[in-house]
Amino acid sequence: MDLFDIEQKKLPVNGSLLEFPVNRVYCVGRNYTDHVIEMGGDVVHESPFYFIKSTDTLFINGGDVNYPSMTDNLHYEIELVVAIHKGGKNIQPENALEHVFGYAVGIDLTRRDLQSEAKKLGRPWDTGKTFNQAAPISPLQLAADIGHPVNGKIRLMVNNSIRQDGDINEMIWSVPESISKLSAFFELVPGDILFTGTPSGVGKIVSGDNVKGKIDGIGDIEINII
Image 1: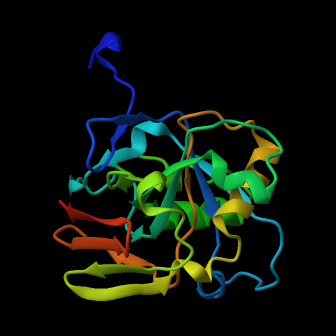
Image 2: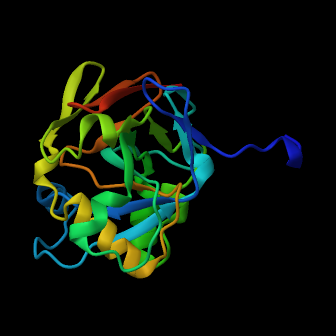
């Protein structure tokens, strides 16, 4: 690929010819209590923490995902994704939804063995979280059309077997709270997106697996590991 062939990632908008140009990809860590427990974390609810996946990890509309290199333990994590169309810093929770353009379904693919080793050594998680096609994502649903959902089943299946089954109302930090706290660390700009964490049931997938994710009222995403 030539330098001048690189294009900005743009998310399709459901029912529209619009495309949402993506600036940065933020992620909330451990935002569902049961997932905190399964990952061996402390259930004491502290302030949210964040990490960043590179924009080129976005895999729009799903499809065939190449099993990544340097791992024997690839994991899935289904997440509600929030798209920001109005920037700001130190946004108050009660105003945060004014900054939301829409919502999507995402899968945060993770090289869990690399992430776990980095944690043990006190190193950054980048090699565990950022690689090609590491963030499959569905088209956006406009908040103007669907509102700002606070309830809805969030589910992931592997080979038609349910692995994750929760509700977005189980998030420790709500969408407004997550946006507000994130904006204290970074000045948000139009085009930023936020993966809001995953419920319990994360696990290993291998080549040949079919993975389907769905959030009621938002959409669905399907990938095949090859």
